[in-house]
Image (cartoon, rainbow over all chains, first blue to last red; front, top):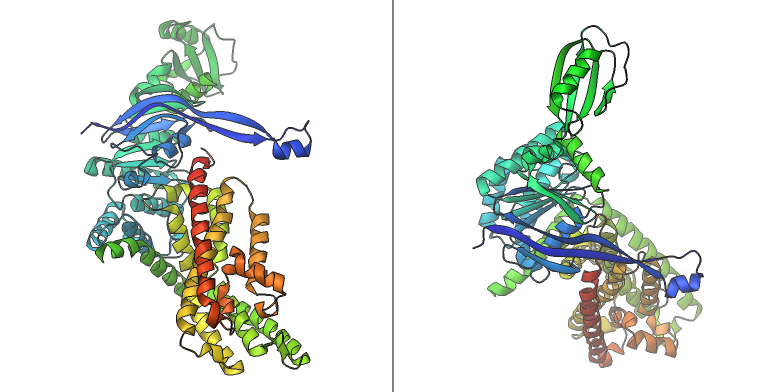
Length: 329
Length: 270
């Protein structure tokens, strides 16, 4: 069997929709409207190994969700090929569904009025699991996801954090080989986010579940994913290990200067150095090492300011990702 | 047998889950009961008055037959099969369709069973209650006591339910192309109500309208309202044949529409 769980080749998705032309009459707009075409995903190729944890990121409208929906067989590609665990989602959607789990952060799949156990049993039947196995798996998931305290509560009475844990648990009822998560931590507080990330890492470690995640949350990417694919305007612009992502913008360094007393004036900085933030206690500058070295920058800054402490560091991941998006715009 | 159980396991689970849901929240049942008793009661009271003004007979029909025909219409409507159109529209507008499409199920049959499950509890409880009340207040017509009545009633009821689900499914599936199906739903729904005999019992229809009611799929979906009349005893197999014809045709239409609809899916954010 192939070591890849997902292989995508030259995948393209175009959406066409009719658009009203204000200069045309209503009759023409009704019977012969102008059609506009949008290329949501443009000839992308990538593969994912079994048990890998992938972040599939990009700004709004980049083509992330469209890709996930094509991977699950919900949307039909305009062209290109997808192979997930040996299945073609356009032809074998149902067979594939037995092997994958999906979580859509903005939508719920649970039965709102009934206790969580009912939803879990319901999905167990949906996945053709024998009754005994359903019960066993529910017990496992209760333990794994710490659902015990609210398992008998109606789903609509759960907090958002509890509900998201329940959503992920229910999508794992059939022990899928891949779990595709579309913004799973959206709206969660920091504690709930961390708890969900820890759980995802746990199922990845214990059940070797491949994780394919889209998120706008840098924390999800940093703490969960070993590899990041960045997509924008439907095109893959980066595909690299997450730890190398920060190095992408290695030509930018940040320097924090802590005032010995107070910074009273903020003189013009030499070429290649710019203020990022400035107040009387602390100044942060960004240096472009293509124009000026760190050593020279430090000398010039020490000539300009009286400092108590200095900190030199790379841009954080959020800034790096913002740069990547902005550069691709 | 094992295969049949496997096939029916999810539908049974859907029905059980939705009945459990209905039992847990009895308010809907109370509201449904009040609404149906009020609507049906007012209409029957009006017809009782109209029949009395005409010495108890209009178009060779008495109030006893007309009232049970109307009763069957309302009992059938308790299944609320018409709402399947709006469920499709909701799925597509909210993007919920993506959750169902990511499961190993047939989206259409899932929605159909879900719709049956949503109304079955109210249907069973209120129909039993209303049958007792109607029987005690106005009695049974002789046509309802002959042997053929119950089996053919069940048969036409099932065929009518399938046809209704199919007709409203066709309307619902148009949501893949039309953003708001409400105007289409309204036209189809009112046609079914009219031809099904909810406003005017079918025994009082003019000849041309009766023909439309008999041969159109809209009227055919409500043949349960024909069962109380004497004519049913001689033409029930013809009417059920008409229902079967429309079931096959509408089933084929659904098959082709859905095949195209799947390619039309477009959800927010992709």
